[in-house]
Structures are given as C-alpha cells and as structure tokens.
Amino acid sequence: MTVDQRARAGLFLAMQYPVEIPGVSVANFLRAARTAIDGQAPKLRTWIKEVDAALERQDLDDDFADRSVNEGFSGGEKKRHEMAQLELLHPKFAVLDETDSGLDIDALKVVSTGVNHYLEDKSRGVMLITHYTRILRYIKATQVHVFVDGRVAETGGPELGEQLEAEGYEKYVEAAKANA
Image (cartoon, rainbow, N blue to C red; front, side):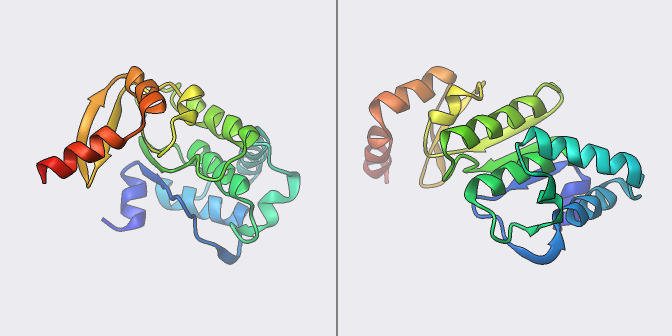
C-alpha cells in the first residue's frame, strides 16, 4: 500500500527520524493529511481550533503551526509534533518507532501523555518500538515482546519490561546465537 492508502486504512507510523519538509507549514501538512484521510477538507474555523488545542496539549508554542515540518525542530519537538498528528488524524493503529529516542524527561512525559490519551479509545492499538524501558513507566504496556534478529525471542506482560530493565537483553542475544 502507498502511504496515503495506509493512512486511509487507519495506520499511522511515527518514524525514529522524521524527515524535514522545507516550505510546508505544520498547519498545511496537518490539514492536507486530514483531507487525504477523510476525502474532504476539514472546515477551516473548527480545524484551526483543533490544531491549536492539539499543539497546546503537546506543549508546543503558538507559532509552531507556521514552521516548516520538522525543519530545525528539536528531537522533542519532532516527537511532540507526531503526537499532535496522532491526535488529529484519528488512526486505528499506530506504530511508534523509537518515539522515546532522544527525549528529555519532560518531553518523554508529554509524549507519553499523548500516547495514553490516544489509547483511551479502546478500539485503537499501538505497537511501541523501543530499546529502553523507561517509557514503560509512563505508558502501560499490555504485552512486551523481545525481538532478536527480526524474530520474537520472548513475550510477556509488563513484568517482562521490568525484567529487561533489571537484567538486560544479553540472555536473548546469546540464545539467538546458540540457535543460529
């Protein structure tokens, strides 16, 4: 599927390293994305209010909507912008690839709040990809999977995240080498 087909099907992907789109404002990007998903442009007056509210919830400045997408954004701004997209585009399922990468503790809390808010609708799902378990202090996982060499090496509940924090990944890497 193409990117727009996946979006219309309800799939959202937050990249570890979001690309810059010089010359395209955040506001225009968000409106174009919503238009592509819904098949019609949102009413401008209500849309501006929705965007402003979403950006405010992500602790982004008022002028953020006028900036070019990801151009000159800090790591935290990029991730908080993705959480605003998640809120405004209403996908059914989100794949969040290392959403916690490079975030300070304040940005991590804001981003986690965005994910938790999205998950309040129980018909939605998230696959959160991370190398660090600190984000699991703020986002309550229902399942944790350990991947090694592209394969599931272990599956468990939230306690597996705590075990990984305490013991690391080494035993899974060693087991994969032994089975190779």
